[in-house]
Length: 320
Image (cartoon, rainbow, N blue to C red):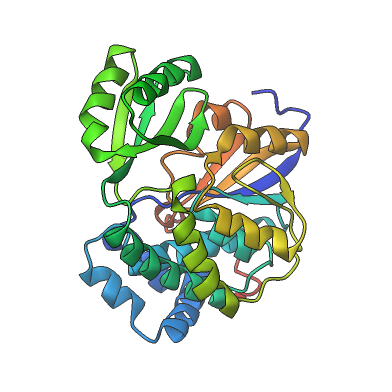
């Protein structure tokens, strides 16, 4: 790791990963930051979030997604309070962009809860009617040259496909027809690649412009964006976002543009960041070699937050 001369700090909000009720409920009830945010969320939603989260087994339900947002923001605020300083920059990968918008000051937490719940409802209805045969396949150990071979073969077969995420040098997510999943898994293995999981509904593709338009027309008019007071990086290209319009565009573009994590890493290095705090359960962005070989990575999860810490400081405040 070549970060000895880089003293800056970034908070990274990861893409959403399964975060079962049993893993996070105690944190949400006991941690003062999470408890305060939970109260705001339930006031906005008009229902008992924890009760619905507990009763719904879907890892990506509306309730699971709002709970993930609550916990990510709470963990970042708790960490900031513990060290007594703001990070130099923040970034949200995929779903994490919502928490980054909040932590940067570009979007109020109540608006973010409202946005998350409404987005989930529109996404569910949209994918029940459109692109019902499209999935997103993730895979590792596949350099770009081998990915190009596979995509060329898909093109020859007349099969639509689209890169949805570039996670690491050899780690990708590709959207394609679900009827081609067995085919691509076989081709990946033949080339030394490793298929990981298949996501449905799919994510991050230029084909989903109709969903982006629905969200922009029906959800975003109710939201108030402000210029961020903490620098934000776009997960699509590592670009620094300086205005309310920039952050708004980043969130909407998440529907139609791929996540390009190596570009984010490059920008963080250019900004002098040497340490990243990953706020939320994460199995990707804080763990891939592009991240771990360039930064000191501090992982903040509900589980680690509940472990006893000698002489832990009391929170100075618990803002909503």
